[in-house]
Length: 229
Image (cartoon, rainbow, N blue to C red; front, side, top):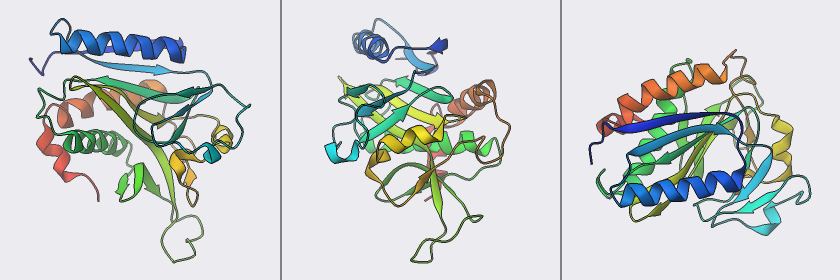
């Protein structure tokens, strides 16, 4: 596969979750069969919760608030909704080295590089999935560490070495909607967004940064080795 041939689709409005999953599965199958190019799909969903393969039912605090979808991606409970950019990645991990751990690190590096376009420093933390932003403007944690908020979630699934599902980055969602779950099973930290951090970033701005950073990181994976630890 020519890794330079990656299609990009940006969907307007709100995309139904079940429709999105069916579309991803069909495209992933076509990629695995050699009948389609890789795809990065940018969209927004209506408010909903998804449960990954490690989700614990007690972490669904308000099961009647929004629709809840069981999904076979990795991870625990995640919120999707308007103002959040969902980035679905249908990429040939087989052609990219068959190293799932490295692929996830590349996705993390991609998010960090994208946030860097807005002057933010994203961090990866052992035992806490996703990308985190330090909040020195807030009281320190009880053990003295700097407070941190989550700004992006990552959860993928592979079928025949092709990925689907992917990343969500908070641009300007209603952060109160995260209260219906324990996001990714983590209780001691908060959730933030680009706008919550005081950055006047639009969805279009983020899309441009994602596209630029993709070429630098995902199409040149050695760059991902410079990700924050």
